[in-house]
Length: 208
Ligand code: ADP
Ligand code: C5P
Image (cartoon, rainbow, N blue to C red; front, top):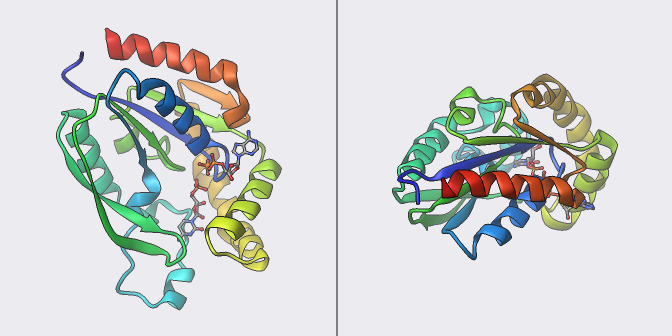
């Protein structure tokens, strides 16, 4: 077993299927290694000092919305197989929740988030870089359903946010970051061949 943890970075647009792919990798490796999924979203900046009305106005699809310094510091610790105390995020309140999660040392870290490839400091810490490439109409339909069912949003708010920030920021930051990927997976979680290939590659790095 390696002295350092292996970090798999999974990027892609909102609702592209990052979480679904991360779960499939987790389910495969959990039987053999200590593995953990890390969500970049848990590193959105704390906005506890703002009112709810002010928080709603934040552009959550701009790199400034994230505490990337904290995420990079945590990734460095995890890479060295040290424990971290990770923040958690509450989408319904648009800020960090009160819960902190302790993550003990792991062999494999699966990091998923919209800016995992776009941020050089994060990218450089990953051993494999994956981009989930799902068409924007499919992503919008998935996001609409998910944000209403799970993130406490209305039809109007999802549509407005998509046009005002999600779509333009995707085009400015996320789509261009695809060029940094080692592997591009079309259509996310239902691409079982791509997941199998990825598992084979991760196994070769973890076991080398
Ligand atoms: P991301 O982490 O990129 O935002 P998720 O994996 O959470 O994406 O998927 C977003 C939504 O789309 C979820 O509600 C999920 O159940 C759904 N979803 C993901 N992959 C598929 C798929 N292949 N077919 C249908 N729905 C999917
Ligand atoms: O899971 P997914 O990749 O879709 O998560 C990232 C998305 O979460 C971003 O596109 C951002 O618009 C959204 N978000 C939000 N409200 C927040 C924080 C993030 O809509 N408070």
